[in-house]
Length: 219
Image (cartoon, rainbow, N blue to C red; front, side, top):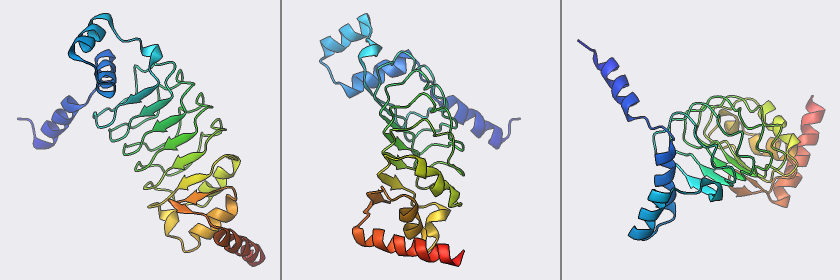
């Protein structure tokens, strides 16, 4: 007789969704409502995926990122609120400007090497311990990685390489509970305009400079 844990796992696996042509078609039709006749024609003739620039696949119980290769001109991809564990299958989406992978089960940042045009990346509410493998994201401007497991200030230091980064969210990480978190982060990233959704004022910048000088003297 099958035990309850095994039954629950099997039920969960049966609920998981796979990204395929039907899912893409359904999602695109949801995004761009058409008349019944137009929808019928689209379904019969097929959608030209190369013309799609925005795709929303949130809350689909997706485990694996796959079958996105036809969307070669995609600029915005929303995959939030799924059960994704790995960042993969994005190599051909070289025109992506925005990528939302918030509320998933991602533990490691990888699979972003081809996304050099990316400006907006959200990894909010995952299980990330360390920031890495982002060196190719030279155009990154907005980065949300709040509600993860970052506990080391070296993660802030890692972000110094992103000269265009002006909006950063690190809230609800262990690191953000440090009493000097804000001053330390602003001191390390002087180009920031917003930190954890709050404006980085001139007053905060001046305080961060004083903190930096004090910290250097202490060490």
